[in-house]
Every structure is written in structure tokens, then in C-alpha cells.
Image (cartoon, rainbow, N blue to C red; front, side, top):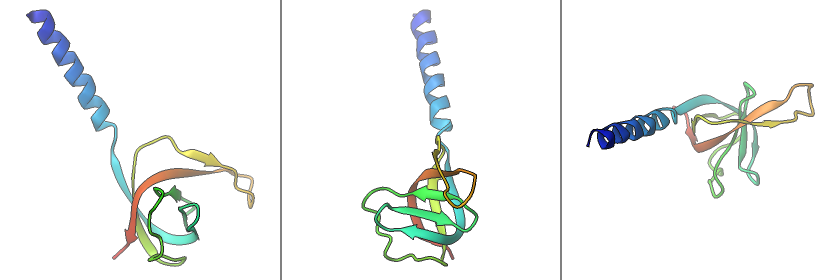
Amino acid sequence: MRKILIATLAVSTLASASIASAATFTTTGTIEKLNMFANTVQLSDGDSFKLPNGTDLSGVSAGQKVQINWSSQSPLWIANPSSDTDRMQLNADSISLAH
């Protein structure tokens, strides 16, 4: 019985640690570039986000201030042809106009 209790406790501890590491964040910024076909948004600070397929981006445009919700993850690194530095792109969950 004691072995089962210890095993159960270990599994629940590991599960709660993995849930805690999946944090959700909100980034607020001004859209610099928008690609509706690729569902990507680049903010004026250089942050770049890919939104889920089917996301309606018709309500946002360059110059607008938006909020982007995303979860912690490993970013995709993209070559930046306009400079020597690469930029990272995060997968976003949603986008909305900032108030």
C-alpha cells in the first residue's frame, strides 16, 4: 500500500510541474507588418507571432495597437533578410485590439 501511495504522489507531482510550466502571456504592441495569408503579425518592437490557421485578421491592420496571447514555448527562429540578426516567431493563441 505504501508503494502505491508513493508512486501516486510522484506522478501527481510530475503532472503538476508540467502544468505549471505551460504559462500564458499577453504581449501588447503596435503592428508593423501583417501577413493575412500566413497568419503572422510582427510588432514594431520586432516580436513576431504566428496565429492559428483560420484566425480572422480582417479587423486588424498595420499601425494598430493589439494584444496577443501566447503560451511559453520554444520559438521558431527566422532569418531576417533586412539585417544580420535572426528573429524569433512564437505561436500565438489569439489577437485582439488593445484598449
